[in-house]
Amino acid sequence: MAKLVHFSDLHAIDRHYEFIIREAQQFDLVCISGDLLDLNDLRFSGNQVSRVISYLKKIRVPLALSSGNHDSVAGTNPALFQAQWMRDLKSDGVYVDGDTFKFGGHTFRCVAWHGQQVQADANDIWLMHAPPDRTKTSIVRGGICFGDQNFGDQCRMGEGPKLALCGHIHEAISWHAKVGRTTILNPRVVDGSERPNFNVVDLDRGVATHHASSGENDVVRLW
Image 1 (cartoon, rainbow, N blue to C red):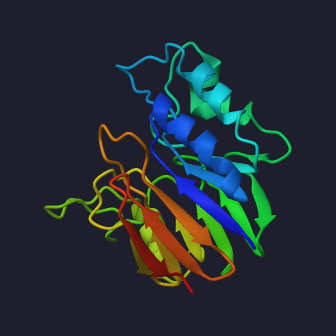
Image 2 (cartoon, rainbow, N blue to C red):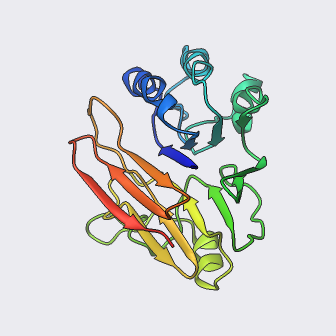
């Protein structure tokens, strides 16, 4: 059995990391698709990096991470440039930006925020912070889209991965979508929630379940 759990947009919230640590042992792989920190030019790191690293090191199952727009900031701290702090976590069983690895009969790729666009194989699974544009996982109510156009074009041409584990759009109108051969999952975010939303993917059965912080679940068949 190969079962993974997918989180995104944790934004250095302590109780959400504590939840992940408690639940991680139920799964074979933990995936976090960006915005582990809560950085921008107005919000400096404080002790964010050390706190988040401490939490991540307590996860005792294989861990895959991709960076998001809040995981790096230009400045004097080299650890915060292009999410270098995340690369420093790299070890056996911890996969970060630029890494590929095998799990459950699939090739996983961790794609950096604004990283170079790469070619996907039909059996690939990507961790990539921004979902493809013009999908329900990248559009908020009112029709405004915040997705990745290049990734969207790649998927619409039928050249995307089999599955994309994304995030970035907190209030997307759907937690799942499909374009071309690519299914996209985005757990979304509920501000102020006691625990994060998350997706569970059973690779053997080809099924994903969305677990909302409200306690409601929803299921979609992937393949």
